[in-house]
Length: 367
Image (cartoon, rainbow, N blue to C red; front, side, top):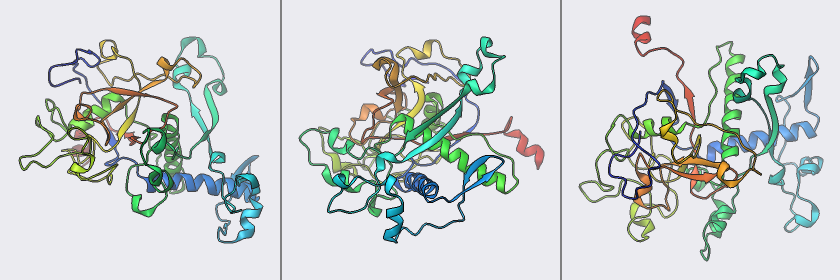
C-alpha cells in the first residue's frame, strides 16, 4: 500500500507498507441510481404494506405479506397511505406525493467491536445488537449545496429519478446510508438463498481501505493509476478517466458531471472507474498515520461513532477521486476523507463480499 512516487506534499498520510489481503469479490461498477432505486422502492413498498395491513404473523413475529398487491395507479391507495405523504401545506398544486424523509429502513446489526471485549464475554447477546431506523433517500440537494453560484438545479430535480441517468453512479448518499444499503442487500440475498435451501453467504459491506487499493491496482503493484503507467492520457492523447482536466475543462474527458458507471476501460481485474467519476466510501475511519499501526494482514480501521461526536472522529476514508477532482486524487495511493454524516454530489460507493474458501487451489482439488 501507499504512494508509488515521491510524496511531493510531504503529508506522510500514506507511507509504503507491505500487506496481505484475503480473497473477496467486488462490484464491477459503482452502485448505480437504478440499483439504489430498487432499495428505495423496496422500503417504500414495505412501509405501504404495513400501513395497508398486509402483514402476517409467524410465531409472534410480524412479517410483510409480499403476495398482496399495491395498486400505485389508484388514487385511493395514496389516501390510505396518508401517513407517508407530504402534509397539505407541503404539497405542490395539491399533488399527493410520498414524503421521502419518512422512508426509513429498520436495521439490525451485530456489533462485533463490543462483543469482542473480554469484559463482555458473559453478557447476553442482546447487548451487542444495534437496532435503528435509517433514512435512506439520497440528498438530491447536494448538487446545489456543493457548488456556490453555479446552476445545477436540473441535476437536483432529475439525476436520481430520470431514466437517462439509470446507469450513472448514485450520489448524495452518506456513509451511514451506504452501509444500510449493504445491510439490505445482504438480507435480501440471504432470504433468497434460504428460500432455495442453499447455504447463506457472508454479508455485503463497503470495502476496507486496503481492499479498495488492492482492487484498484488490478495486479499492477507499482502502478500509480488503475490503468498502469505514469500518465492520465493514452498514447493518442485521450483521457483515461472522468475528472477535472487542466484548469477546469470538465467536458474534455467526455463527461460534464458523472458518466455511466461502466464508462472507460476497466482495469485488469475488470473493475470500472476505480479512478475518477465518483470518489468512493470505504469502511475505515481516516487517521493520518494509520499505516504505522494497522495490521499487515487484512488491515482495517473501523470505529462507529455518533453523529454528534467531534468532527475529527467522524472522518471516513474516501478513495479514487471524482469528476470534480484534479488528477492527483486519481492515484491508487492517494487518501482523502469526508464526514460520515455528509452527502456529496461526487461521492458514491460499491460493495464487497468475502470469498469463502481457503485457497484458490481448493478448486483444483474439487476438479
